[in-house]
Length: 323
Length: 191
Image (cartoon, rainbow over the protein chains, first blue to last red):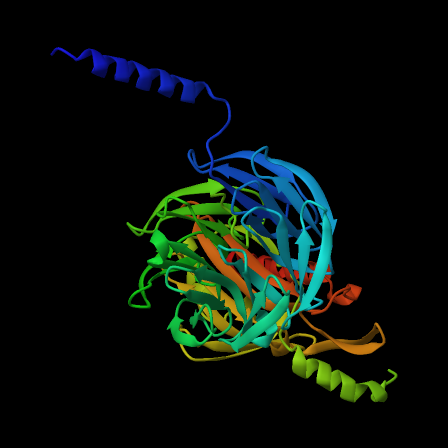
């Protein structure tokens, strides 16, 4: 078989590119940042290898975690430490902390990692952080025991689940005012925003269902029954698949977004909580609090791909995978 | 015991608005024991909802309703008169696993304390949103390992808990309950 000069040049280029790639010591992004509440650490998973490549010390009893839209900043809620820890999402190291209120749980970041949001479980407000200045710039009173947070792609809207008020609130990120509040099921904890379909999903821990809302008006669209004690939500395959962790069932319910019903229930580890989708649209990572592990699911083929050992009490509540 | 009657209306209001909140940090604890008996034999005992009164030294009475279905319930009365209402959460013949759940208003009050200027009722099991699993693993012809593990929050729902209702109290109480139960189970099976 004779090869054209162009082809052989191309394959040489490809080979050296591949070689260069293999010699590059920097691990491939995206990373999954898993908070381990019992160890006061964050396990960093390189999702290309599905291996923990770094374990970072953070503050006391970390639960919530969020990566900025550009992947540069990671915000960790130190639930018992009355502070949040900031990580450099590329260098994989702690770069500071910001004192917040009494019980930081849910966290979120904007697209650029300039502004952060922290839901305070005890004081019933969302704290707004200026990340570069390392300070709290506002406190927005919301419902009781706010938990899950979501920020729109244009950074203009912030959503929060008010667990003990059975409601979700919509905050205008410019005026820092609550512009709408809507009752959902009992004890909403995790929320997820699908901007393609203009929908907000809320997982209701006590009523064992998901409330589907219009993301602009918060008008309820439908309620979808799932498993026992649903905690958190991830959207895969451009929002076609909605995945929910069922903490008391040790499973994840997979919902088809068109039919709005459960099409599959996948077994994961014990007490799954945090769940986040990989930018490839297919893989979904689940933190198993009792098993001290992360389950990797394929949201399209609906199967378990891998289980990764992490630290004690993995919660990873929030958007924990970098883009 | 002094009664702070002036606080009662306030207290009632407080219970009404926050009857189900808890601290943000979930706890877990686990106890295990090796029993010189086949796993099948252990499972035959632990799967029956009210056998616990035969093997747990702290359980005096047990009343069960429903079968091994989703909504089966049982009430355990303890030797010191306290009680807890539990609901079956998990039942798996294949995994030889049974699990119950309860919340803090399903538990009798052990004592009333004054904390931060308020009367607080301390539940006998100072936990909230409790769930557990009791399961047995085959370790050979005449040997099995029994595991009892629980997940829960502390019972005090606001910041700065009293020591009777902090995380440590929750873990210590449940660990001791599991430990004495497993030892009782071992005694019964190795008789």
